[in-house]
Every structure is written in structure tokens, then in C-alpha cells.
Amino acid sequence: QQHPRQTSKQRFVADLSQCLFDFVIQLLPTQDEMAVKEDVRKLLERLIRTIEPDSRLLSFGSTANGFSLRNSDMDLCCLIDSEDKLSAADLVTMLGDLLERETKFHVKTLPHARIPIVKLNLDPSPGLPHGIACDIGFENRLALENTRLLMCYAMIDPTRVRTIVLFLKVWSKRRKINSPYKGTLSSYGYVLLVIYFLVHVKNPPILPNLQQMPPLRPITKEETHLNGHNIWFFDDIDLLRQRWVSENSESVAELLIDFFRYYARDFQYNTGVASIRSGLLKKEEKGWQNDYSGGRYDPSRERNRFCIEDPFELDYNVARCVTKDGLYTIRGEFMRAARVLSQRPDRAIVALAELCE
Ligand code: CTP
Ligand code: MG
Image: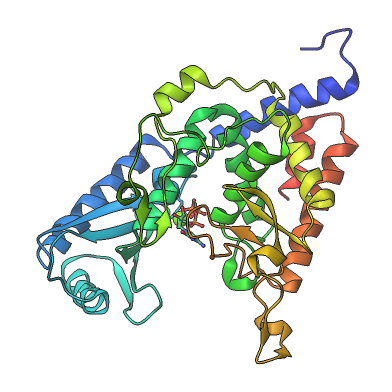
């Protein structure tokens, strides 16, 4: 409805927020889809236990962090709690054979990859019109922890955080800038950009920095470290939801417009590193200038055009796959989005459609 004293900008922004909620809600997975995925996880866990009885199969990625869209793939991680276990490569091969025999999945194994995985695909069927795609990895405990961190951030301010993240995931897929294999950024990278923006760029912040909050009780180094990485963060979300109230009351639409403007114009791609743990860092201080392999500069191998620090694995640049062309395209898309939204067409729905075209 229109208020007589609202300016056209206020009207557009209110309208856009509503459109964003409506848009995102229809893309959420159905209860049915989530139930089917849980059944698949249980089935796979039962099969893996015939090879490794002490194993557990856990979800990570979007199915577990609250940022899942309809038909998104399943990321599963197998943890083995026994002392003498098979090597990941052997397990991948054996599990691949077993699944090929016992299930309808199409199976592909990558036993010798940096992170050995089994890739599974299920053909579409009437009950599952899009089939299922699923990756099973092994002992990737850091991924389980970063999934939990993102889930906690999503739960602090579910309306604003989830709406923005889910919209960006759809937008980046439709605009074809969500494929690390083709030189652009993973969904995980986009989520980190949103959290960085909401914790460190917005003032007052929308989200607290969970990794820098004081713990409620003293904690030992053993409790906080995993493979040499400090994985501690404040995860008492019930308490946080009682105590954390952001002084920033900007709407989803205002935040999204500002997000695009910031990454179109203000973020220092040449020198800056976005770190959700520490705020804006310099490439120089992390040693993340462009690679010079053997003294010769090889642009095709460069890793650090765009720098996003992983929240736990601090020497890991989540945007390492982004190439020069990829970054050019991504920035072009941020600019285009900022422009479309700043033109404020009469109806916000028109802007959204144009944005995701
Ligand atoms: N991950 C990671 N390092 C990366 C990419 C991914 O640790 N460079 C882990 C993270 O735990 C992340 C999970 O893998 O949550 C899945 O990553 P991705 O598929 O990019 O994100 P999803 O949220 O699953 O998005 P989508 O729905 O597009 O699959
Ligand atoms: Mg995924």
C-alpha cells in the first residue's frame, strides 16, 4: 500500500523487500525434498557401515547451513571413529563398487583427487523430478565446522541474512558467475562476502563477529584447535538471540542495494582481502600478491586476483579459482546489479526480473 508521505525511493525499497521475500520463499526446498534427502543420507550411511562399521555420514554445505535452495546438491562427509581405518582412496574405490552394485545411483569415483570423493547422481523420477546430485567426501572436519559457523550466522538474523544470501545464490547462478571450475566464485565464496559485508562493512553492524566474541568459560587449546586451525567461535545461539540486537534497522532491500554498490565500487580488489574473522586485510600482509612461479610471472596460474580468507584455514584463499576474466565478469555483474536497482523502475518486481534475467 502507498503512504502519502513516502518518497518514491522509500516506496521502491519497501516494495523490493517484499518482492525479495516472496521470490526467495518459492525457491526454498519443500518438506518432501528434505525428507527424501535425509532418507538418502541414511541409506548411504547404512551401506558405508558395511565397509567401515565405525563411520558416520554427515551433511554439510547448503543442506546443513540454512542456505539451501530447491534441488541443490547434497554435500556429505564421512567420518570414521576407529583407529585403523582404510585410506580415503581405498574407501572411495570400495564404496564406489558397492554403490554401483546395490543402488540406482550413477557413480563416479575420484580416489586420487586432492580430496578423494565419490560423486553420485540419481535420474529424475516422478517423485523426484530433478533427481539428486551428491558428493561424499572423507574426514573433512573443517567443512563441517565452517558449515556450523555459517548456520549460526544465518540463525542470528534469519530474515535479513537468509534472504540476501539465497537471493545472491540464485542471482549468481542465473548470471553464470557461480562456477569455480570456470574461473568464477563458489556459493561458499558468495556467502562469505555477504557475512563480511554484514559484520565489517555495515556500520552499525548487522551481525556480531562470532569468532572474536569472548567465550563464556575458559577454553583450552585442545578444545579450540583442529589440524592446527583455530576453529573456536561463539555458538550459543539461543543466548545470542536474546542478547544481540543490531542497532542497524535497514531493510533487506537497502542492504542488498548497498551490498552491490560496495562490491561494484568500494572493495579494493587489487590490495584487499575480505576476512570474516579479522575484517579488511592487505594482500601484502598475507603474502597473497600475484604468484610468481620460479621468478616468472604466469598470469594463467595466478591465484590471488580476488582474495577471501577462509574463516578457519587462514592460508586458504576461497576465491583462488577466480581468474582475471572471471573477476572482470563478476565485478561487471555487481555494477550491473547496482545500476538496475538504482534506476528504481516503477515496480520492484520488474527490477528483480531484470536482475536475474
Ligand atoms: N567448502 C569449503 N571450501 C570451499 C568451497 C566449499 O570448505 N572453497 C565447503 C563449505 O563447508 C561449504 C560446502 O563446502 O559450506 C559447500 O560449498 P558450496 O557447494 O560452494 O556451497 P553450498 O552452500 O552447498 O551451495 P550450493 O547450494 O550452490 O551447492
Ligand atoms: Mg553444495
